[in-house]
Length: 189
Image (cartoon, rainbow, N blue to C red; front, top):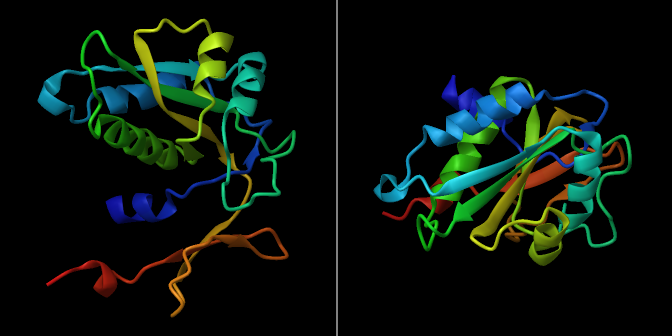
Protein backbone atom coordinates (compact mmCIF):
# COMPACT_ATOMS: atom_id res chain seq x y z
CA UNK A 1 0.00 0.00 0.00
CA UNK A 2 2.76 2.51 0.89
CA UNK A 3 4.70 1.45 -2.21
CA UNK A 4 1.62 2.19 -4.33
CA UNK A 5 1.37 5.70 -2.85
CA UNK A 6 5.08 6.34 -3.41
CA UNK A 7 4.89 5.14 -7.03
CA UNK A 8 1.83 7.33 -7.70
CA UNK A 9 3.40 10.36 -5.99
CA UNK A 10 5.03 12.07 -8.98
CA UNK A 11 5.95 15.68 -9.74
CA UNK A 12 2.91 16.86 -11.66
CA UNK A 13 3.18 20.18 -13.43
CA UNK A 14 -0.22 20.30 -15.15
CA UNK A 15 -3.51 20.09 -13.32
CA UNK A 16 -7.26 20.35 -13.79
CA UNK A 17 -7.39 23.86 -12.36
CA UNK A 18 -11.19 23.87 -12.18
CA UNK A 19 -11.22 20.98 -9.67
CA UNK A 20 -11.26 22.83 -6.36
CA UNK A 21 -9.37 21.80 -3.25
CA UNK A 22 -10.93 22.88 0.02
CA UNK A 23 -9.14 24.71 2.79
CA UNK A 24 -10.10 21.78 5.02
CA UNK A 25 -8.17 19.39 2.74
CA UNK A 26 -5.12 21.68 2.91
CA UNK A 27 -5.36 21.73 6.70
CA UNK A 28 -5.55 17.91 6.75
CA UNK A 29 -2.36 17.76 4.66
CA UNK A 30 -0.56 20.24 6.94
CA UNK A 31 -1.70 18.13 9.90
CA UNK A 32 0.15 15.16 8.38
CA UNK A 33 3.28 17.31 8.19
CA UNK A 34 2.71 18.56 11.75
CA UNK A 35 2.70 14.99 13.00
CA UNK A 36 5.83 13.98 11.07
CA UNK A 37 9.34 13.82 12.51
CA UNK A 38 11.06 17.09 13.44
CA UNK A 39 14.72 17.59 14.41
CA UNK A 40 14.98 17.85 18.21
CA UNK A 41 11.16 18.05 18.11
CA UNK A 42 11.47 21.82 17.60
CA UNK A 43 8.48 21.92 15.23
CA UNK A 44 9.78 25.13 13.66
CA UNK A 45 7.89 24.85 10.38
CA UNK A 46 4.92 27.07 9.60
CA UNK A 47 2.67 27.01 6.53
CA UNK A 48 0.86 29.34 4.19
CA UNK A 49 -2.10 27.61 2.53
CA UNK A 50 -4.13 28.80 -0.42
CA UNK A 51 -7.03 27.43 -2.40
CA UNK A 52 -8.33 30.91 -3.23
CA UNK A 53 -8.05 31.69 -6.97
CA UNK A 54 -6.97 35.30 -6.37
CA UNK A 55 -4.26 34.31 -3.89
CA UNK A 56 -3.21 31.44 -6.18
CA UNK A 57 -2.81 33.93 -9.04
CA UNK A 58 -0.32 35.86 -6.89
CA UNK A 59 1.64 32.71 -5.97
CA UNK A 60 1.83 31.11 -9.43
CA UNK A 61 4.30 33.54 -11.11
CA UNK A 62 6.62 33.33 -8.10
CA UNK A 63 7.41 29.64 -8.70
CA UNK A 64 9.62 27.80 -11.18
CA UNK A 65 7.87 24.78 -12.72
CA UNK A 66 10.39 22.80 -14.80
CA UNK A 67 14.01 23.91 -15.11
CA UNK A 68 14.72 21.32 -17.80
CA UNK A 69 11.99 22.77 -20.03
CA UNK A 70 13.71 26.12 -20.48
CA UNK A 71 11.33 27.34 -23.18
CA UNK A 72 8.18 26.29 -21.28
CA UNK A 73 6.79 29.09 -19.07
CA UNK A 74 4.81 26.66 -16.92
CA UNK A 75 1.24 25.44 -17.05
CA UNK A 76 -1.26 27.50 -19.03
CA UNK A 77 -4.40 28.98 -17.53
CA UNK A 78 -6.75 26.05 -16.90
CA UNK A 79 -3.78 23.73 -16.16
CA UNK A 80 -2.47 25.58 -13.12
CA UNK A 81 -2.55 24.31 -9.54
CA UNK A 82 -5.81 24.60 -7.62
CA UNK A 83 -3.96 25.07 -4.32
CA UNK A 84 -0.60 25.72 -2.70
CA UNK A 85 1.14 25.00 0.57
CA UNK A 86 4.23 27.09 1.26
CA UNK A 87 6.59 25.77 3.93
CA UNK A 88 8.32 28.34 6.12
CA UNK A 89 10.92 28.16 8.87
CA UNK A 90 10.13 30.20 11.97
CA UNK A 91 13.64 31.43 12.78
CA UNK A 92 12.54 32.45 16.26
CA UNK A 93 12.14 28.73 17.00
CA UNK A 94 15.15 27.35 15.09
CA UNK A 95 17.94 28.84 12.97
CA UNK A 96 17.90 25.99 10.45
CA UNK A 97 15.40 23.47 9.13
CA UNK A 98 17.77 20.57 8.50
CA UNK A 99 15.71 18.11 6.50
CA UNK A 100 12.41 18.84 8.27
CA UNK A 101 10.85 20.56 5.27
CA UNK A 102 11.66 17.57 3.04
CA UNK A 103 9.99 15.23 5.51
CA UNK A 104 6.99 17.55 5.79
CA UNK A 105 6.69 17.93 2.01
CA UNK A 106 6.80 14.18 1.45
CA UNK A 107 4.10 13.66 4.11
CA UNK A 108 1.94 16.33 2.42
CA UNK A 109 2.42 14.82 -1.03
CA UNK A 110 1.74 11.25 0.09
CA UNK A 111 -1.43 12.48 1.80
CA UNK A 112 -2.42 14.33 -1.37
CA UNK A 113 -1.80 11.20 -3.44
CA UNK A 114 -4.01 9.18 -1.10
CA UNK A 115 -6.77 11.75 -1.77
CA UNK A 116 -6.39 11.38 -5.56
CA UNK A 117 -4.47 14.64 -5.88
CA UNK A 118 -1.02 15.35 -7.26
CA UNK A 119 1.58 17.93 -6.55
CA UNK A 120 5.00 19.33 -7.24
CA UNK A 121 7.66 20.63 -4.86
CA UNK A 122 9.17 23.96 -5.84
CA UNK A 123 12.59 24.83 -4.52
CA UNK A 124 12.65 27.62 -7.09
CA UNK A 125 10.70 30.40 -5.38
CA UNK A 126 11.17 34.12 -5.96
CA UNK A 127 11.54 34.61 -2.23
CA UNK A 128 11.94 38.39 -2.07
CA UNK A 129 8.93 38.92 -4.33
CA UNK A 130 6.92 36.37 -2.34
CA UNK A 131 7.82 38.06 0.94
CA UNK A 132 6.72 41.41 -0.44
CA UNK A 133 3.51 40.12 -2.08
CA UNK A 134 2.33 38.53 1.17
CA UNK A 135 3.85 41.02 3.65
CA UNK A 136 5.69 38.11 5.25
CA UNK A 137 7.44 38.88 8.52
CA UNK A 138 11.26 38.64 8.36
CA UNK A 139 11.23 35.91 11.02
CA UNK A 140 9.91 33.45 8.40
CA UNK A 141 12.31 31.91 5.91
CA UNK A 142 10.64 30.56 2.77
CA UNK A 143 11.88 26.99 2.30
CA UNK A 144 9.69 25.28 -0.25
CA UNK A 145 6.37 25.59 -2.04
CA UNK A 146 4.07 22.74 -3.03
CA UNK A 147 1.56 23.11 -5.83
CA UNK A 148 -1.47 20.82 -5.66
CA UNK A 149 -4.37 19.78 -7.82
CA UNK A 150 -6.02 16.96 -9.69
CA UNK A 151 -3.30 15.74 -12.08
CA UNK A 152 -3.78 16.89 -15.66
CA UNK A 153 -0.94 14.88 -17.14
CA UNK A 154 0.47 11.38 -17.12
CA UNK A 155 3.93 10.82 -15.61
CA UNK A 156 5.80 7.78 -16.93
CA UNK A 157 8.75 6.34 -15.02
CA UNK A 158 11.29 4.58 -17.20
CA UNK A 159 14.70 2.97 -16.83
CA UNK A 160 17.59 5.34 -17.35
CA UNK A 161 19.46 4.71 -20.56
CA UNK A 162 23.09 3.61 -20.71
CA UNK A 163 24.17 7.24 -21.29
CA UNK A 164 23.04 8.13 -17.72
CA UNK A 165 20.92 11.06 -18.91
CA UNK A 166 18.53 12.15 -16.13
CA UNK A 167 16.71 14.75 -18.23
CA UNK A 168 12.94 14.33 -18.20
CA UNK A 169 11.02 14.88 -21.43
CA UNK A 170 7.57 15.06 -23.01
CA UNK A 171 6.30 12.87 -25.82
CA UNK A 172 3.95 13.95 -28.62
CA UNK A 173 0.91 13.20 -26.43
CA UNK A 174 2.40 15.37 -23.64
CA UNK A 175 3.24 12.36 -21.46
CA UNK A 176 5.95 13.39 -19.00
CA UNK A 177 8.80 10.80 -19.02
CA UNK A 178 11.13 10.54 -16.04
CA UNK A 179 14.25 8.33 -16.25
CA UNK A 180 15.20 6.55 -13.02
CA UNK A 181 18.50 4.94 -12.04
CA UNK A 182 18.35 1.21 -11.30
CA UNK A 183 18.22 -0.03 -7.73
CA UNK A 184 21.48 -1.95 -8.26
CA UNK A 185 23.22 1.28 -9.31
CA UNK A 186 22.16 3.03 -6.11
CA UNK A 187 23.25 0.44 -3.54
CA UNK A 188 26.94 0.48 -2.67
CA UNK A 189 28.16 -2.82 -1.22
